[in-house]
Image (cartoon, rainbow, N blue to C red):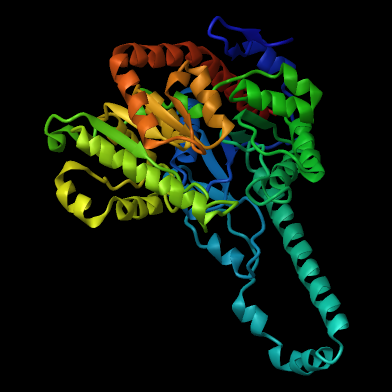
Length: 485
C-alpha cells in the first residue's frame, strides 16, 4: 500500500501499512527478556543535532513502551552511555591497535572479550628484530609482507567485531538507524558509514531482529561501492522513511521501491515540549536589545572538514565577523552559539580575532558567548533569542523547534530543503556567495514579518506531528512483535 499524502505535503504512514505491510517478523528467537532497542548513529557526542535526534527517539518510544531500555551503536560509547542509554557498542572497527580499551571499561557498555594494545604489540619484539633487519635488505618483499600483515590484522579485527556485534544484537528486539544524513560517503568514503550500515543490516538479519531506517537524509552518494552498500542496506530494512523529498529521490536511485516509502520529517522536530529546558535568561543581560543568536559552522576549516580549504574558511570567518559588527552597530545583542562541539566552537575565536582588538574592547559588554555542552543548553539560548542566523542544518532545525525566526546561510542542499519545507526561502542565503549586507537585509525582512514567520513555523510543526506520531507507533509495534516471538 502506498503511503497517504496529507494536506501538509508530508507523507503520513498508514498505521496498518507500516506495521503489517513492511514488517518482517523474526523467527525462532525463543527467549524472554525486557525490551531493548539498539540505536545506530555515526555520533561521537559532539554533534548536538544528532544528540537531539536520539533523545527525541528515546522520549517518544518510552511514551509507548514504558520500561524499554536503549543501547547505542556509535563512535563514542562513553558519551552515548552518559547522555542517552544504559549500554553502547562500537559502530566500526578502529584503526588503532588499542581501540578495544575505549569501551571495555565503560559502565553499562558491552564488554568486548579482546585485549589488543601496546603491551601485546611489544611481546616478541626481540625475537622479530632480526627478521625486520633481514627484510630491510629486500625492500619490495618487506613492503608486501607489511601490507599483508596489516590487511590480515584488519580482517581479524573485523571478524571479531562482527561476531561480538551479532552477540550484542541478540540481546535486543530492534535496531534503528535514525535521523541525520546517514546515506552519505563524504566522511570516510564508501568503506566508512555506508559499509557500517550494510554490515549492521546483515548482523540484524543474522540475529533475527527487525532492522529499520527512520527519517534519514541522503547526502553524497557517488561511488559504485557506496551505492552497492547503501542499496543493500535499504533492501534489508524492514521499514524505511526519509526526512525530505530529495533524500527519497536519492534513495530511489539506489533501490527503486524506496520511491514508495514515506517522508517523515527530521526527528529533532519531535522532541517533546517536556524535554525542553527553560529559557537561558539572556534577556537579563541584553538590556532590552534585540537578541540575535549566531551559529557558525567550521566550513572547510582544516582539521574539521572532509575537504579542507584555508582560503574559503578565512573568507567565511571574515564575513561572520562583519555580521557581528553590523549587528552591534545597529544596537542588537549578538549571542554566538554552536551546535557541533569540537568543530563549530573552535570557529568562534577566529571570528573574534577577525573583529579586531579595538572593536572587541569597545563592544565587550554588548555580546555574549554562552557555555554550551548539550543540545538543551543550545535550545535554552534559542528560546531567549529573537532571531537566529545559522549555517549548520540542526542549528536551523532546533531554531525552528523553538519557533525562532531563522536566517540560514546554507552550506549544503539539505539546508535548502528544510527551508523550502517550512516556506522560509526568503531568508535563505548561500555560503559561497553571501555578504554580510545580505544577512542584514534578510534580518530586516524577517523583523518586518516576525509574527507571521513564527506562526508559519508553528503551523508546520503542528502539521508534521501526525506523521511523526504514526512512525513512533509503528516502531513500537516492531518491538512488541519481536519480543513476543
